[in-house]
Each structure stands twice: as C-alpha cells, then as structure tokens.
Image (cartoon, rainbow, N blue to C red; front, side):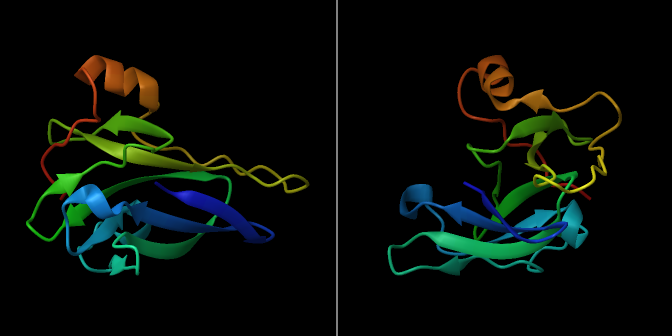
Length: 137
C-alpha cells in the first residue's frame, strides 16, 4: 500500500509496502519511474515482516508500477489509486501524485489516453482482487 508525503516543493516521498502476509520473502517495485528495471528499487524486510521501499518522485504526475516478487510473480498493489491495462493482457497499478497546495499544476499523463480506471472498477471487473498479468517489457 503506497503512502505519500510531500517533502519539498514539487517532490513527494512514496513508501511502497507489502504486508507480512503477502507470501513473499523479497522483491522489488518496478515501474515507469525506474524504467521497469527489476531490482532497481528493492523491497526491504521490516521487523514486522512487511516489505517496503521508499522513492522520491515529482508531484503532479501519475506512475505505473507493479511488484516483482521473489518467485518471479508480478503483483499489483491492492491499494493502488487506480489500475490501467497494459500491453501484456493484464493491468498495472497506478500511483497518482497530486500537486500539493500552493504548487503550480503540471499534469502528467499515464497510459495511452484511455485513462486509468478506478481501483473499485478494476476489482469489480475482475471479480475481486486486481488482476495479475505478464510482466512489462
């Protein structure tokens, strides 16, 4: 579940977190912000057994991401802001970083213009949990 906190003008600190019951012992956050490079943003195990990674990103943009877990399994975040279909027959999680109060808007786009679906719509369409598809290339 990503949590967001604004650290300075135009920048947002994002903490990605998988709970202890995720079934993974290691993994990484992979997305457009790290060129979909596995291992570029590794998840670290916390004392409570959760897996976390922290990145700092520009506010005013949306980003696609997924978790690549130790067994080669790709997972979406069940608490993502939205989901958007990818080119592999699945979907990606979407992280939206609004501009903090008082900042000028620079609206970044995600996807191919079709726009992200809401998380609730994606779950309803898939009958529950967000879909897991093939890894992005």
